[in-house]
Length: 266
Image 1 (cartoon, rainbow, N blue to C red):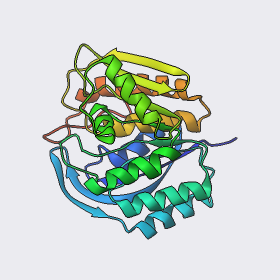
Image 2: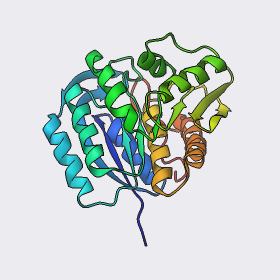
Image 3: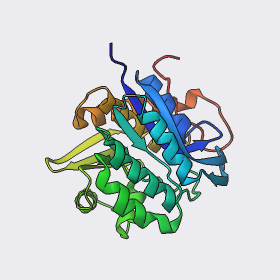
Image 4: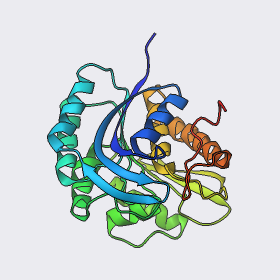
């Protein structure tokens, strides 16, 4: 029996709702064994980020090499990368190990509004990691920031930004609609095959901490299990929508609480 394995390369969230912790919970909830490479430690809770301690880039690379030299990695999810040196180390490692699938979540700002990526690192993310990605998963503000454009306000603008991100070298772009408005949250999967719109009812809850991390990890989990990209994205959208809908079962912290990763079990 082959065990599907996914690797998350991301930052640690000390409150457990986002980052590495959310990624590993997502993998486990979806039946995938999770491995992790930590790029940064954050002092963080549901109210905000009070400190960031970046892991040396050489040790980020050492973690990646340790995992790939032993485990059969079906998919990689990349989240918070923090600094230019780490981006360069991750890019070099991806070229070294050639994983089958790479899901890049261009994490720039936390749910609380705290910045998680140095301004000077945005261009490195754009030029070194995006071209290596199977799919890039920005939310609306992140897509705009990557292109130095205003936030898209219509379906046509979202699809246009998706096309321009695609031109940076990735194979597909999933623009997440959680920051949009309206009764539905619509995500757009843009690829060479066209655009696929995936809608779900927008849930009225403040407990959305870790949503972006978890959706991207759910896509990676699907790819690790052998699903094609469209199926992985559809299944991830269904799962994350249910996790958000169940978030108010929890009472964790005093700010933006976490989603319910294990809503299928309790």
